[in-house]
Length: 190
Length: 193
Length: 195
Image (cartoon, rainbow over the protein chains, first blue to last red):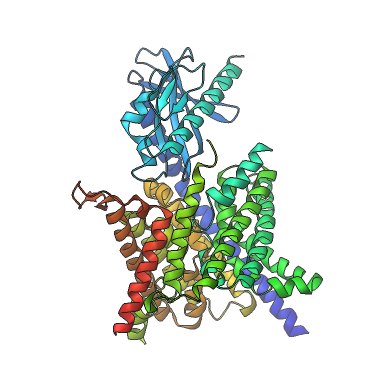
């Protein structure tokens, strides 16, 4: 009786002790690395913003409804547009897109693919300039459409051959992002 | 409702846990030899995965996020899953001996089944709400079971074929899985984005 | 003893090709050699330090809960690797994705802790960890090389096949992983029989 009690106590003690030590070690490691992880994420986003919008010289972050929106300013300090990170499911995994719209919120300035794990050589071609440049100067008041052959109407872009799903995913994520961004900014202005 | 159906179809067929994400391969190779064991394993996995999804979701959103302890998620998830499997096993053994007979041996194996941890991690990464998480867990288990049953059927037939000596056992199973994965790729056009 | 450890870990009891353990990451991350190397190093790290702690604690841990304790220890080291990659090599972290935390349930690590580290002194346990890890590493790199060369025509990003070669995309997709691994295991079987 006594031995089994001693044994059980020992079990609980060892488990708790080890869990506590591990917890402490992890919180230490996490705290020392936390800053760097955030910085890495920021670096990608800022690099993408400067790539899409040439005249952008300064970026300010604002948080609305727990979401981050990037206010873009030129060298004279004038507001030239907004940028937003939208994400969703692609063919193989998550796709993260950074896009920018002009300050009238009617024109799409461009997109950059921040993160993707699509099929190399096929879906990952969404990262190519030829695909991304199709998005420059599209209108934001109607949804962007993805078609397989030559775009017939305005606001249509052509999917990448053999990567229809990845291309459609990008367009879907973009449209959703544009809607989100617009409603967040309207809420902020109210 | 439409969201749930989409999650269901995409997890069972399109992004099948075994054939697309390579989760659950160990039991997949080990247990798919006979149809009877495959059925047993499949049911336990569906059972545990649905349960695990729900409980992990609750713990993640109600405890880890609220207390800012998200970096402990791996440790907490695996402990929760291991304890859950332990509890489920005790429960089943006590209250349904017949069910225990059918599932029994496979339950402990499920703990190291990457599929459960993978399911928990994916569900958290995709920000599902509670109902979506439960459906996701169920569909993942079902997807695993479907593929397991198909493999078991094929392997039972393979027993009557003359497989070259070096390919017997694991190699032919892996190659069959590869062909099966190729077939399942055909489902990827099923849902329009 | 030492000779046996080397021979087993690297060949006769190879974690991937003979024991058929740790398949999930093997099939998933070997799309490029770089990913294979990264995953291999991560596994060696976790295996080494987990074996270290398990071997040091082997007389202290009660038998009933040893698996739970090993799991906590392994999970801690995996989280450390994950945080390290996210902070210092974000590209690799994104490429390996969810398969880094899945190292926790990699049967190789738990298997070695249970079968070897918990029963042997520190120096042997560490050696076994390095050798098994090394075996896993060369297995990954071999599989990754085949898949990257046939699937993209490159190794580590460098084009080594002429542009006229039409890459077999299926090699970098899931079916290709299964097919190549199955063939490699068959080749290993053949080599084993020649001996």
